[in-house]
Picture 1: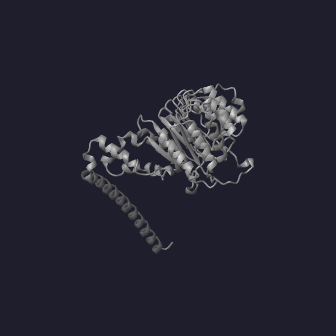
Picture 2: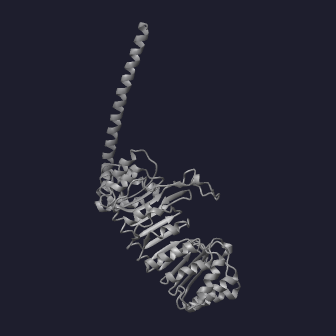
Picture 3: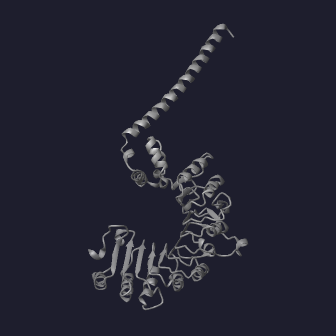
Length: 437
C-alpha cells in the first residue's frame, strides 16, 4: 500500500473516532436537555401544587378519555413528562391495575409486564390478552396469581388473516386447532380473587374441558363466567373428576357456539346463579344437560338472556319449569315462529310457565305480522297484574309496526289502565315509541 493510501486511511480512522466522540457528547447534551426540561416542567406544572389524592384522580380519569388500547399507553406517557408526574404515576396503583395487550411479543415484554403488575401494588388486576398466550407470559400471570381479579382471553387475534367470520364452513379436520389457553403451563392451585373469567374463542379453535375445569376449580371467588364461540373437546378420561360447586357464581353467559353446552354444563353447579345468558341448545340431548345443570344448581335465577331462537319453542318450554323464579326474560334475536309459541303460552295464565315474569324484552330481525302482535296483546292482558314492562324492538325502521289502528289503541289503553311500560320501536337509547306517536 502506498504512503498516500496509508495517510488517507489514518485520516478516515481519525474522523470516525471524532464522530464517535461527538455522538457521545450529543447524547450527553440530549440527556441534560431532557433533565432540564423535566425540571422546568416541574416548576411550571400546576399539578405539582395539588394534593396527591387530587392529582392521582386526574391521572386515573385521563385513562377514561381514550379507548381501551390508547388508555394503556397513558401510564407510560405520564412517566415521561416530569419528575413530579413520574412520582404521582408511580404512587397511583390504580393507574396500573388494567392492561390489554396483543400477543405474541418478544421475550423482553415479560419484564415490562412484571414491572407493570408490580406498580399496581395490592390492587386486583384486570388483564385482557389478544392472541395466543405463550408460557413466558403465562408464568408472569401465575406469579401474580393472588392479584388476578379479571381475566379476559381472545386466543385468536381478531385482526389475524385467518380469523375472519367467513360463512364458508369447512369439514377438513386440519382446519381445527387444538388450543391450550395458557401455553401448556400448569395453573396455580388457587386463584383466590379471580372474579370474572372471559374467553372469546373462534370457530377454528377447540379447547379441553380439563383446562376449563381446572381454572374453575381454582377460582372460589368467581362471580361471572363468559364463554363465546368456545368449542370443547370431550375429555372422556376425566369424566369421573368430581364436579365443582361455584358458590359465588352469579352470572353465566354462553354465546354463539352451541357445542359448548354439553361439556361446559357438566363441569360445575352454581347454586347462587342470578343471571343466565345462552343461545338455545341444539337438540333434546343438550336440553337434558341444560335442565340437569339447573336442577342440580337450584339457583335463585331472576334473569334469562337468550341469544337466539333458531330452535323450536318446545325446547324452551321444556326448560322453563327449572327456571320458575325468573322475573326478567330477554331475547336478543327472536323469530316470529318462536314468538308465536311464546305468546300463546304466556297467555295461558295463571300457569306454571314463568309465573314470576314481570319484564319481557324482545328484539327481532324480522317484522311481526298483526296476528302475532294480537297474540302478544292477549298475553299482556292475561298477565296485566304481573307484567310491568314489555319492550319490543326491531332491526329496521320499516319493521316497527303493530297493525291496524284498533290494535295500536288497545296497547295504549292497556298501558294507561295497568301502568305497564310498553315500548315498540328501534333498539337503542332515545328511540321513538310507536305508542307515543
